[in-house]
Each structure stands twice: as C-alpha cells, then as structure tokens.
Image 1 (cartoon, rainbow, N blue to C red):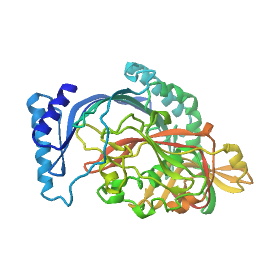
Image 2: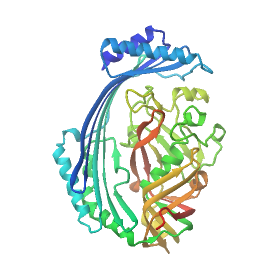
Image 3: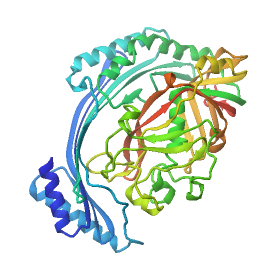
Length: 485
C-alpha cells in the first residue's frame, strides 16, 4: 500500500500540487441471505485501488485507479493535477484549508471474532434456523434473513507528512417476517428494519443479538397486526423506541448539520439545510433536556461512524451539536471550517471507496441518555402511542417538515399499554418536534444503532453512520395512519 501511495504523492507534488493526499483502500465484503427456506444470495467481493486528491492553482482535482502499476499510478496523480488546473479556470475563490498537524499512526478497531473466519456454512445454518422459526408461524408469507460483513483497510498519506493506517471490521445482521392477507401487507423486523443492526465489530455482534430467540415473537407480531386496530389519528403524546429515535436523529438532525449542505456546495440526493449560519448559537433546536453529539471517537462505542481519523487525516472528535436544547455545532471539513471562520475541522470527511472524493458525512450522531425507565415513562403517559421500528420516512429537502411510519404501535391509556395498533405514523416540523421532548430514558436503555445505507452525493456514495438513542417521549404530536386499509 505504501509504495503505491508514495508514487502518487510524489508525482502530484512534482506536477505542481500545493497540497496532495492519497488514500489506498482495500475493501472486502461478504453478504449472505436466505428467503423462505433457501439460500438467496452468497457473495464475496474485494476492491483495491487508490484515489488522489490535490489542490493546484487554488482548486480541487481528483482521480483514481485500480490498476496499481507505476505507470498508471503516476498517470492518475498527474490527471488529478490537470483536473484541478482546469477547475481553476472557473473558480470563484481559491481553496483555503484550516491547519492540521502531521500525524503518523496505526489504528485497528476492536474485533473479537473475524467474521471471515466463520464458515459460510455456519452462517447459512443459523440464517436457515431463523427462517424456519419465522415460517413456523401460520400467516407468515415471506421470511428473509441476512448477514453482511466488511473488512476495510486503508492507508492515508498527505503532503503534510501524515501517514495513517486504519483497519476496521463491520458486521450487520437481521431478519424480517412479512405477512400478506387480503389487500394488506404487514411486516416485522428484528433487531431493526432495513437490514437489522450494524456495528464496527466482528461476528460477536451476531451472538449478542439473540437472533433465534426472538424470531417466533417477531413472526407472531407480523401476523397479529392484521387483526390490530388502525392507529387513531389526532394530536397525541408519543414514545419512540430507540431505533426509531435513531432514524429521527439521522434525518432531522444529522443531515441538516452537514456544513456543505448549509453552504450550498452539496445538494445532491438529500437536498440542503434549514440550519443557516445565523442559527448557530441562537436557535432553540430542542427542549432543555436534549443534548446531541456527533462523536466519531472509539470511546463513544462501535458505531458505523467510529474511526480514529477521517479521510482528510483529521483526528476523530466529539462535536457538540445540541447542548441543553441550543444549536451549537456543525459537521465540517478543513475547507468548510475555514469558510465559517473556525480554526479546525470537526473531522467528518469520509469517502465510500477509493474511487470517490471525501464528503462531509455523519459520524455517530447520538442523543445523550436521560434518567427515565421505559416502564415508568409508559406509566407517566395518560394518552399516547408507543411506536417501534421504522417502516417509512419522508422529509423535505431542507430537513424541516417530516413524516415517519413505524411497523407497530401500542396505545397507552392511563399509564398502561392496552392494545396493539397497525400502520402508525407521526409528522411535524423539526424544531417544534424536538422542543416537545420531555423525557428520555437512561443509559441502560441506550443503543448505538447502525445505519449502513445513508446516501449522499453525485455519483451517490453509500455510507454507514451511527445513532445512539434511548426511548423518549414527545408531547402533542400529530399522529395518523401511514397505510390506511
């Protein structure tokens, strides 16, 4: 890796780049899935290449290759400089980066059990056992289960003299039971929807999730939803489980704090942001009990947004975003931090692979836990709905107006869960919603969820992010039916 990277760096500097950085990435993925008693997909892939990003004549240039001969690496580095000079012909102002130190380091993320050492046959055996448990419940039409493993090895070097090696392993797993009855579809997922739970750790995550033990319950709930009452519409208190709150954070806090969206330099795929610069330090984003951080440090936990250094060689940081309800921070890069007068990047630049430029991406954007217990929170709710596991989401391109649907709900009357509800949804305005939060459960109920499929950019980049959350209550929220029967 180092030989390839050094070739590229030397060529870029020799061709006139005033700043240059090279990322060599070697990514391996194994994906296994089953469907209705049969293996569905079993695939293993590997990708090795390098990307060169430079500043020349005050503008950015980027080029990449997976042909790692001396000739092709030199050609790629020269092309990056050529692209930068061509871009400079249309630049409005020269690129300026906030300072960063030279760093020499190696970091390997904790991994107790290498998932690639676990035989494919053993993985499929567990998935098929889960599948059988799901289909043992009468009324389950489709049973699906999957495991997804990634090993990401990366070397970053720059003209600052930095040389940073990082190695991390990511594991994801989950399953879903789908039930068709007449003209209605109901679905229950475990431990979360859209693939399950993902973290930066090894196969030990699969063992920790008690997948097989929960399969029968999940299948029974999917079938029972057909007979459940529709969620009542109106203004009600709601309690969100931690996974749904994690997605709420992702869409209505995580995306709008990306500073490139705020500045208008990135609007592809998910739009811009209502968090204009005048709101920093002045906006009452949420109620006083709400504090949210963007924390990439390993101490925060094994999230998909955990690393030691970002793709500009900036150390991982814990950045306060909301402090006691006040909006106090953005996710930034070395360039955007300079644009708003900050002295340092928040270390949030990441690229999906060697052939993509780094973009500002969410790290682990998490709400800090409160003090409540879930049972006490329910007992303290007179008229409300507990909503669990995301089913759908919609939010405008400024991240201000939203609607979410969940897989299942439970009506609360007089401090007790009294009945299952199907097709629940809720909606609102971001700041109104967060200011209605009046209770957050404690650290023992806090989970760091992984979102493996966050999209951004053109061409699109899919990135993993993390969101820590405990169940929380929101007062007087507009509730409705997402899928009326």
